[in-house]
Length: 169
Image (cartoon, rainbow, N blue to C red; front, side, top):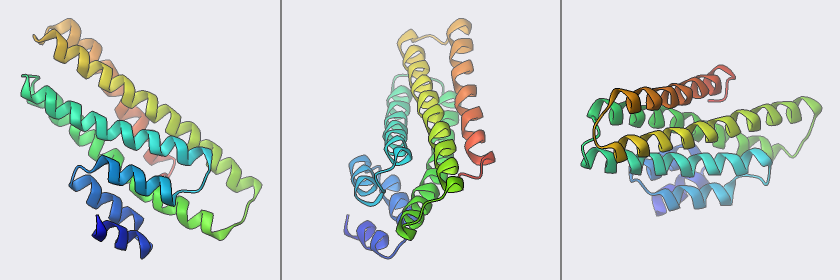
């Protein structure tokens, strides 16, 4: 998408990623991240997380189509949107910091902490997707399945809050 590329070229990576997300263009967003982010461990995990979020939103749409309750799908969709917004901001900041071409023990510690949180977020999104798959497969919204899924969704929300509390967004 030419408009998104122009935004990224102007240093507005977050805006470019928002545009891709609004258009549900998973590949465009991932390609842009792969091109722009530095070759740091946190970048690799951030790209994985973004891919998982796009997958989650696709899964949510499919789940709605086969009768998963709207309150469940709306909740997951809202959580994914909130996390994406934080990630767009983080990606932009990572690119800016990498352009400084400096290193320090404090910077490395911050990058390591963020990588750890991104790893946890990646696992939480995967668990939420698995929970949604269980719920979709069950067909009926039995209390047992809903309870198991609720635990997974709460884990995603907790991890997303940790992302925010660490100032990563």
